[in-house]
Length: 348
Picture 1 (cartoon, rainbow, N blue to C red):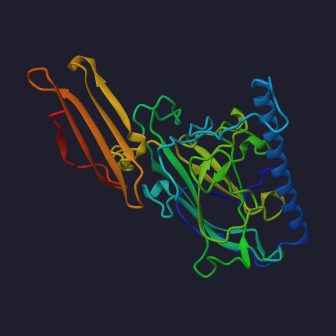
Picture 2 (picture 1 turned 60 degrees about the vertical axis):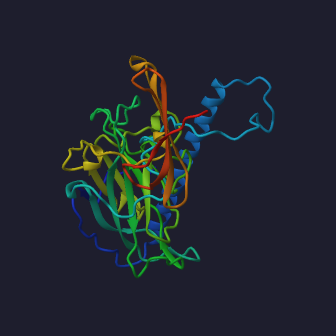
Picture 3 (picture 1 turned 90 degrees about the vertical axis):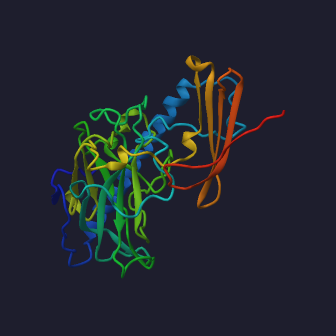
């Protein structure tokens, strides 16, 4: 892999412009770009094969068949290499950065560009922005932030084309190589590669290096499911390398030095406010200290704007007789509170 030993630019905070290249890349630049693409893909393929081999070695092999063993698809479950709580967000991802200004990292930079025939064009200047949003941090048993307690976030990278270029597929920039050397990894180590997924809560979805970008797109920074060596904690401080592959020696690469996520009520108020009501809040509660009193709450999918909220409160009256209250109502998506009527049914 082409190491990032000589970097053209380092970004700490703020936005500025990197001048576009005056001419199309040379034949040597194209050769270096293609070599980097091949190397990156080959190293990920090797890591994938290794991960599959390790999983196969630890799995039960009795009764193995040529076409596999699973009759049923998988059911929803946690990705062991997830970088954020699965309850944090669903598709679509945000397309407007938020958070404190000094923690929104943005710059303009040229990306490798082709036309519909695959011909190499003058690099197109795009805007690259990195930011975080607050996730649930309420006593998670799986910390995603080794330096900030249980404060969890989701980290985004967005590529914005100019309004004049938006949607053009007859010419388009391509996704750069994304890497992080968190833990002092050498840039040539394939474990530095970052999985940029256009959808959250996925295992293999990614925006592959050198893939076309027709429309401005937000990606969530995630981990490849290729053993623990590829695991990065994006809540901690890390350096993100954005390498468009414009030529040898990492020409045009930008480094984003991302601070550790450590929210306050002023910088990330959502980290301390009530969370939007969604299906992850479906639960039951029981108190043996109150005569077996308990609650059951369910949040069901609804339409594009609302969900259905249902609850049962199983308590007793002053004489110790069962007194059960039931409630059901509609809650707008994004709401943090719900008000509905509770009823007591008697007579059978």
